[in-house]
Length: 162
Image (cartoon, rainbow, N blue to C red; front, side, top):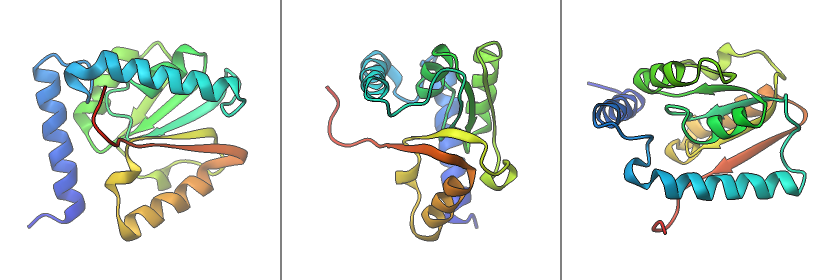
């Protein structure tokens, strides 16, 4: 019998395989243009108010998926982006698409990453999928991974789009 974590990982892997097989851009499927517009508006607003690091910064996206959302946006602004995700399909998809755009990633545990190595950690709608001790462990790792004065941004879904 699968643990809750293994079951969740299997579910996300199946979803990414379906998305890729059906030529969808990202997790948002046909809603990608709307989701991209909203994300870029939000990130531009955060940048304008000084809440994002300067270009050239090191950024980690949690729940990065295939890299078509925040990772791509941060990379296009000249940052070095690393992403982690449960889905090997999503990570491989991102590596194929973005090998030349300063985006790297892996299916890994955050404990494998060095201390104090990121200026920004962006939650790509991942933290709301964690509960109890999983969430506590994730927050502990975020604190460990952020550089002094680093920023942690939580992005979560709520309500109906559009």
